Length: 130
Image (cartoon, rainbow, N blue to C red):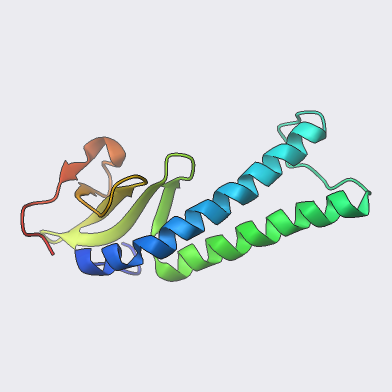
């Protein structure tokens, strides 16, 4: 069971901050990817080269990623796919673990799914859900 549960209003109020965090995480991941490519395309986590500027840039991305992910954890939501902008907000529906499900581009949370079903089990929230 999730430590925190959200009602629909709480989750919707957090969307502006979650959108900003997603963008910060994407920028950090893009920075990691650029480092990986510049180091020869290795699938392993790149080690910063000895060049001071490149090393500083690498660690800046690490710090940004870490800070954004810590804030996501503090909020209690779950980023399921950074690139697609999929975010779940744990909740309880009919006594069972579930998730309020939001995808980037949607103006508010309109879907939910059982915790075990994931995105494929997304269903529209009932009319008048709060």
